[in-house]
Length: 432
Ligand SMILES: Cc1cc2nc3c(=O)[nH]c(=O)nc-3n(C[C@H](O)[C@H](O)[C@H](O)COP(=O)(O)OP(=O)(O)OC[C@H]3O[C@@H](n4cnc5c(N)ncnc54)[C@H](O)[C@@H]3O)c2cc1C
Ligand SMILES: NC(=O)c1ccc[n+]([C@@H]2O[C@H](COP(=O)([O-])OP(=O)(O)OC[C@H]3O[C@@H](n4cnc5c(N)ncnc54)[C@H](OP(=O)(O)O)[C@@H]3O)[C@@H](O)[C@H]2O)c1
Image (cartoon, rainbow, N blue to C red; front, side, top):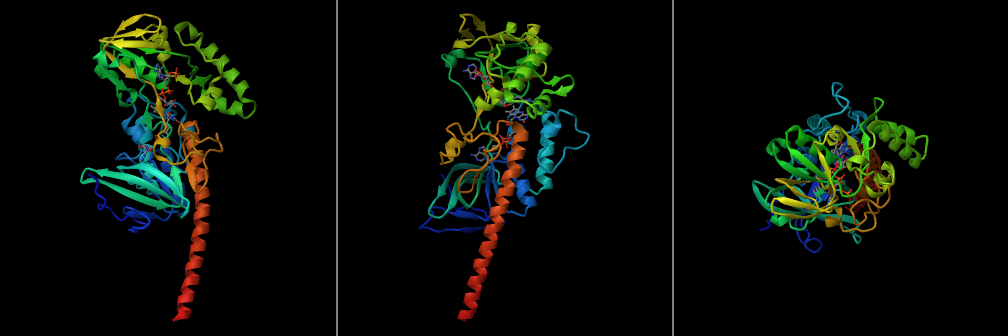
């Protein structure tokens, strides 16, 4: 049962109840509402703080960086060197290694939020956001849940809305024939922590993106026997090329040559350094790795050791799934595997279409229609951060553009409001 009265008054906002306009208690935000307290939301918030713009961050989880804290496995390390993962205006501590582990990254994000005094509204899930053309304002409806109160509905009213809910907001769980008969343990990688529970077990890992590869590697390290499903194709690249990060090499080549040429070079380097991976069942897509990422959002795998386990046969590569039955899976080539558990490394998706009532700026997949670097600004004060398909570095660039743009219009509007107030004040005085 919803309880509409359990409303806390927030700093820098006024609350009001206006029955002819709103059907519930509302909070007027003198600045933008940011949805999501992951790296993208925090980076925009920091930019706004620095420019003196008030804001509110709404976060469905009970902490910042919930993806990193709650939905990643223990062995996770950032794939890119630290200079590409830093958020604006706050460097990593000097003693951090080149490739951070997830705990280091989380501690950095905690320090980031603390340094800029960012205090999100936790346990608050945005249910819908709609632009009210009559009033020229965004109406953002949330459900606030917390252990001490019953859930309550709140409506935020604001001029600017920043969508920072991430490209990976929800797990993708495909349907498989017979999975309900399987009987063994089935989980998505977002719930996987380590291979400890899988010692000596046969595990089917569905998917061969970075999650599928790294979870398979982790399972091997815990003496489990993973079979990894590769239903189509995948680009596997070395994490480093001649001592430099592959990402860095690609970024510097991109400054000098067209994308297709960089893609060709990357594939040649991958073949030279990793050998022919197709003979292990890892067919390369015909489209180059960067092109594929840009057009379909499919991330190339940066190898951190899984390939060596595939070569040695510790990770078996198997084709697509036909159906499950009790304790077994039948593959599209007719082979049948006896398995104990299934781990779905089947990826993630944006959840924007489920709550943002808008269909011009965002596509039906919940990603801005305009590709990077033009996908951060929509109409009527709508912004997006972290949907560039360029990970943390793309999120940082978006955050800088968004916070500057909002600060500019917030300052102009505030100045205008002050002028209007002063004029009203003068009229009042002359009236008396
Ligand atoms: C396993 C894994 C490893 C990764 N490793 C890397 C890496 O090494 N380098 C890299 O650049 N990228 C990596 N990524 C991609 C990663 O998602 C982003 O780089 C980064 O987390 C993006 O930050 P974000 O703030 O845009 O999104 P998120 O971190 O997903 O944050 C979005 C926030 O919005 C909140 N939210 C969602 N919906 C709502 C709602 N309706 N109401 C309120 N709050 C909501 C979520 O709870 C979340 O806290 C990885 C992703 C995964 C899944
Ligand atoms: N260390 C790191 O930095 C790190 C680690 C993990 C993840 N990440 C990032 O997190 C994001 C998500 O990665 P991810 O690996 O979780 O997801 P992903 O890259 O989207 O990969 C999903 C995989 O699941 C497969 N799949 C989906 N449905 C399937 C089905 N029905 N049957 C068989 N296979 C199916 C896909 O195959 P198809 O290609 O055929 O669709 C693909 O191989 C990426 O940006 C990634 O780079 C980073």
